[in-house]
Figure 1: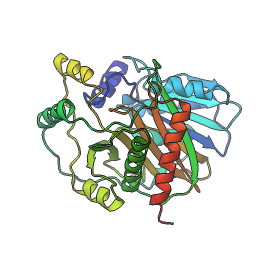
Figure 2: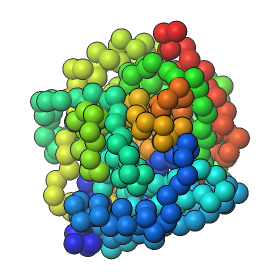
Figure 3: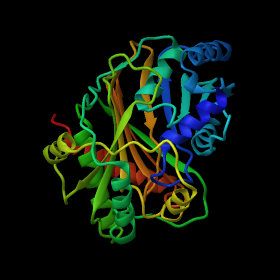
Figure 4: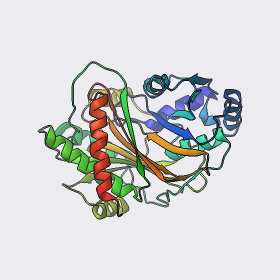
Length: 355
């Protein structure tokens, strides 16, 4: 079953985007209570694996310190999930109340990762995310693939201007904590688009053809399970998009088609060759308002950073705190640049807040 779980996870990710990324998504939880012992965490993971075999092999639980946590986060994010490897990664911080959980995106989506956090902590977890419900299928996969190929060749989406060019692997991460924000997916997408425009203007680069990638759950977050059950949207945005425009576009546009069960070697080669021109300008993912009782004080969610820019914006709210994040390719952004990009995103998000 381990091999089948691994193959399934890699197949879910499919052909689109940069095939060199790890497709690892991360959730960093600051707890209000003591972190469970590693043996207890592993036992709970083993029980979850019995019920959900697509999670693959049970991993060892790593222990680290606050000083070592960034290095563990980097490794969890960048290390590829090889065939037969565990599809879940867990680390506890021994001198801070922090639990780090990562998973292959083909095994779990954002709500699935949130559910796994609840399993590890043995507490009920829910999200205010409503899900998209029943949504008619869009164009067939082959038609979509041909259109994406033409787009990549002749009119690729805008790219968030790199701040540098360095031979560095992996990603950089930045998070900021805000008083609870009352924003939905459309507002966060609009904020990310405004951030792109302003950032590129500062770098003297046009931001034409901005395409937002957005993951949205088919189901509500009332009782999430540790599965992957998300739709993927690509929203072509005009200049200076407002929330109402993004919401209307999201409401009327069908999701991208699922990948076929098999892919050809030629298709995989073409995807790799065109990786720098495929994908979207950025990815935005919002876990919504998360309830964990008093167990979790804050949640930093880092979606997978792929596409032309290799930039992903994340958001999650718990208690009175909304955590917004940026994850970006290290070869294009160092830590200071990621912090500046996050600052621009935070400012744009504040502009969307109705308070």
